[in-house]
Length: 492
Image (cartoon, rainbow, N blue to C red):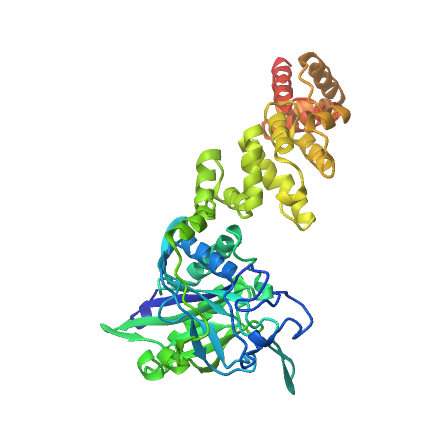
């Protein structure tokens, strides 16, 4: 980014901290259930409340899911990792410390390739480590803050990127693709509205003027609950930091340090909250109640074997193998079960026709029912058969729409439905010629326009084709009908 009139060379520097709630039944260090929307303070015990003498025990499933996500992010897995106490006081943290990982995280040195403007951009992953969540402060009244501790102790995977992101769009697509990844591999539901995935961009700007470099303060943005908010907050913060530096050249990292800012979704601005703590402020020290974790090679290989083909790679393969556009491939692959269904159905049908049907009427039915295409309950064999009947001309595209609707909630095969409803396409040329002759006889003006008026030829021909399809109740083959119409017009 350049501001030519001011002779400024501006480069945003953006890293992300992401908290992903892992899809476990119980909390990180106790047996309390992880349950969204439960009665406040009803899913707590002495361990997650920090009662003296209560001892934590690591949730093995949380560790397995964390390693699975780290492997998908191409991270190196530590063969020795320990737990640390991160000391700080908030009302929603009853122990006055959080169990986290400091100098020996479970994974590090990863990379996540994100498609930006049709090109894969590598974003380095500094670390991905396990920790427990805090509770939730509820500010529903100006005179009182209530605290719900149900969330306290919920397993979180914290993912920290290197500052490789340079724009709001890159930040947006990183977040979108990361959410897709963790849901695809089954480590998290990642519902942002439920707080199961939280993004905190760390933003500052490098400014070069007259050959001298300045860096604005690093600001961590909180309270982002949507991808749109991530993009808007990053865009706003870049512009704000440049403007504040222009107003006061001492607005730099050297003089102001780091700060936390909250996103105001109503006003679409960031607001100063407080100065940001450094690591020494948290007084990290090893947790004396938890033993280190030392995974074996066999354990890591077993987790690695669970990984499916990842979404970005699968989309690229669908484009190559099935001739799909990037947008269509993304729509189909966005849900893993739907992508699996598509591949199974393609074996029984015509892949390109199937893709059009997935994008059109199958997506429409899924959206209207608030589910995915896989959630419609139509098996791959029948979906594949419908695409094959359409591709080989046994039924036309209009009939396929009707048949698909009748397949929902029914076990009948598409051909059975087509025969019962009289939707099999007529391939009898003599019968189609009869319909063409009747359409010509009943629409002489359209015939004359098609023959003698070049400006109206296309419209008139289309009208005649529509009349034939109407006479045939949609059963005539439109390609053959078109040829018969052209032949008859040429002979007049």
